[in-house]
Every structure is written in structure tokens, then in C-alpha cells.
Length: 240
Image (cartoon, rainbow, N blue to C red; front, side, top):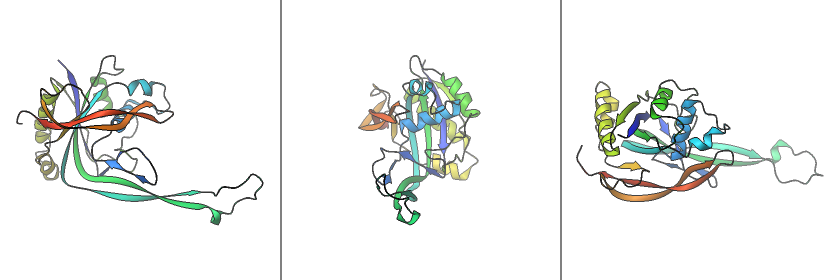
């Protein structure tokens, strides 16, 4: 049987980066592969400059289900200051001569996620090891940016079976988990009929509605290089 690691994510703000071009840092509402892998690596204690990070990033399938009731997005602003172009013979530039650039960053708020991780062949860590790391993370965990801390325990669990059954199990498990919390119960009781995954050949269990290219598969962390991968989206073929 296939083993899956299931956990939940909920934070005041989430930011799942898109390719950063220009002055606006956009966010997708669906977790990027690079963000989730970085999240897991931080829990395991793998630093960004660790040679193990590139091998780690080549493994694991990621699937997610967002629960959106009144989720909305917002901006914050960052000011970047840089000196004007000067020749090597020029005098020291005064601070008032510096140029200022205002950059925008997007965030989504009030979105709850159920995330499923499936290890691939030769994966460096088992899902059981990653589960333990999520319970006792080495580094602080945040959702996309450092100003987005978690608002709930990750509550990781292991499930054995097919991916579609793992989604059904997650739905039932976290419904029970949040029965006494009116805010979270409201979220997990909401309609969340879209599922996202990067596993291939899931048409037996899902109605595929769209296939997107996302440039979020890291191949070289030191050089910040990413390649495209397919993200599938659709609905379960059987009722929950």
C-alpha cells in the first residue's frame, strides 16, 4: 500500500510565490511545490546551503485541497533603496541621491489547507520521519514568508491507500479534529471541491478539470533555478 503523510495548514496570511518579475511579488492561492518542500526541509533541519537540499527537492509528490469561505487577498509594501549609477571616479553619493523603489507582495487570508505528501522511490526521508519533524521542527515554520506564522498545529497523520482515499480520510479526520472549534469547523464544513496534485495517472479516481504549468520545481537552490512541472486540478469521482 502507498503511504501518505497528511497535515493541515492554517495561518493569518499565506503567500505561495509565483515567479518574481518586476515590482510585484504575486501569490497563487494553491501552495507552490517549492514552498512546501522548503517547509518540510526546514522542519527536518536541512539548511538552504546544505548540499542535501537539491536531492531532497527531487522527491515527494504533493497534493492539496484549499478550503476558501471568505478568503481574500491583500498587499503589503516594501521599500528598496539603491544608489544611482556612478563612475569609479565619482565622489561618495549622499543618501538623498539614492533611488527608492516600492515593491508589492500579495497575500491570501483565511484559507485552510489539507496537504498530502507521498514519498517517491529513493526518497531521502520516509513519511514517518517527516511526520516526526513536523511535530518537532528544527527551524521555525512559516507559510511562504516569515511574517506568516502558523495559527494551528500541523496535526500530521499517516494514511495508507490511494490518493483519492487519502483525501477522503483527511476530510473525515479533520472534521472530527475541529468539532469543538466553531471558526475552523465553519471552514472545514465549507465546500472545497477542487483538489490539486502533481502525481501523474490519477484519472481513474479524479475528473481532471485543468492542467497548469507552474515554474516551482527547484533544481538548484544555490542558483535559485526552477523548472516547470504539471499541476493537475479536478474533482473526486466518488462522493465524500
